[in-house]
Length: 172
Image (cartoon, rainbow, N blue to C red; front, side):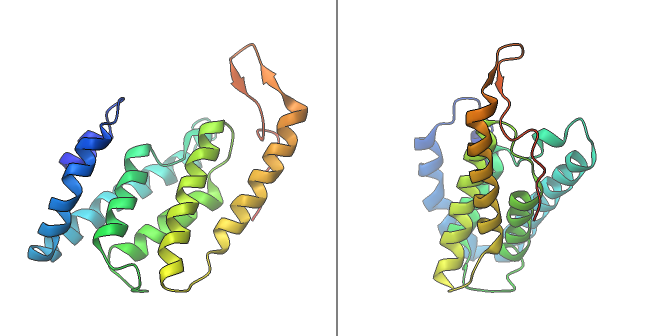
């Protein structure tokens, strides 16, 4: 909980998060069921929030997982063995992150950054177990399409956002 509260601040203290990680890694083997249950509950809550945002046409553009969830994903991949195909925490995490790559629209540059970070996490986790992640390939294709349209669409001065990729549909 403390890790999430630190990761949720506007100015993320990387040194404080880095100081917590060794202690969390050391404590997890002592309470594996409790830590697994808490991690799964947090992931289910975030997955439900993403699904609700994806269903709502107004909030769909902000359906990407928040930074705190991406940092939590990195922590969970460091704590638990990523080589297990049916791990009780990492299997739902992989499904959640893959779903974010496939379903969340890329409307703003920050969405591209989050997608690249999620792709990096998935590729690192699956490289150790020699598995392919097709969602990353689809995301990279969408990202390349976004950058191609970015040069033609430009900057919208009216509301101060880049309007790249907003006209393109996300197709798997």
